[in-house]
Length: 102
Image (cartoon, rainbow, N blue to C red):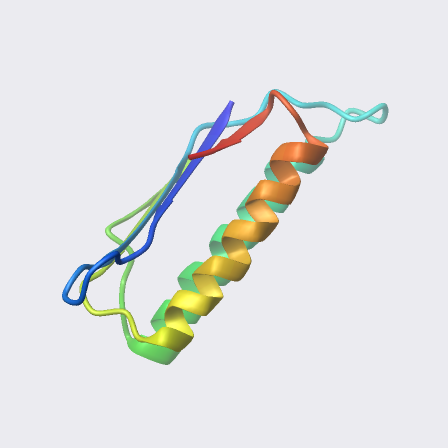
């Protein structure tokens, strides 16, 4: 199962935390793991966005695990992660039992 955790700042000075790990065992009728492909695409988008726009490197980038920690996220950056979180939630509904969003 793929697990996704997104923690947004609750108070001024709080950071943003994103962690995605695990592999889905989903297989389509053709044998493809569409769930893992979608999750990986979203993770790569977030990695590229924070590198290009904010010069922030992820804490962890390895097979099956991405962690991004941002000490002082601005409103625009938080909105990008909120949009990604909504997509992860949608994926968890589409591929129920294969992805969990916390």
